[in-house]
Image 1 (tube, one colour):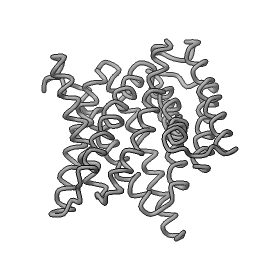
Image 2 (cartoon, rainbow, N blue to C red):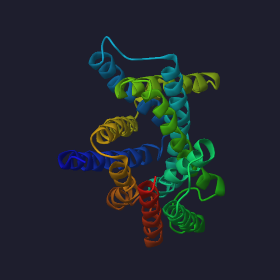
Image 3 (cartoon, helix red, strand yellow):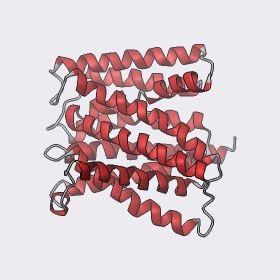
Length: 299
């Protein structure tokens, strides 16, 4: 591996992890007296405004699209960009950023399970060790949250299931995106299709429920936090894929899995009014992060 590429990949991955943490904290602040659905609308709109024009200009006039690639990216957008974020943002709204992010970090566990069932991949001792660590960390966080003395939000079993559902859906998305990229479609083009598909689906869902947010509702005091979340999310996507283009997955993904710890630092610094970070919660997050790193290393 090129040492320069490895260093650049590490720096880009650190930036991506920070961007994920900023997104999570911004959504938490904005949904304190706002709605997760409004946050998702603004984030998706921000993604479109930044990604679609860039893809159209950078790769004009050849976008290398096939029907298989389009179908794969549309499916990835529906599963991860739409459904995954719905569960993720709703989780942040209900149980807080410092609890949602570590539970969402169990994503490698779900991705491994999917690979074993769908692709027939072999489970090694390293996989088992990583899985056990993640399960132990998730159990510790769930127990600490359910006690209610360290959280200011919902501590029900349903609320705790939200970030795990998000992790499962986020775990499916890379496999679908990989099918699209295998067709030769550029990264920006794939991201653009994913985002447009997810946005169209979400707006159609809100329209069917007669729940489309008004411009006035989106322009309230929470809009700035949703916009920050959108910028952070777009930054994460770009930094993540750039990191993967210059460094191995085994270098990039474990670094990004440290985002729960960054979220906790930001929560202590800026969210003390909204949620409390206990040492047990921090310990659980460290266990999950450790398990995710081990599991990724043996992927």
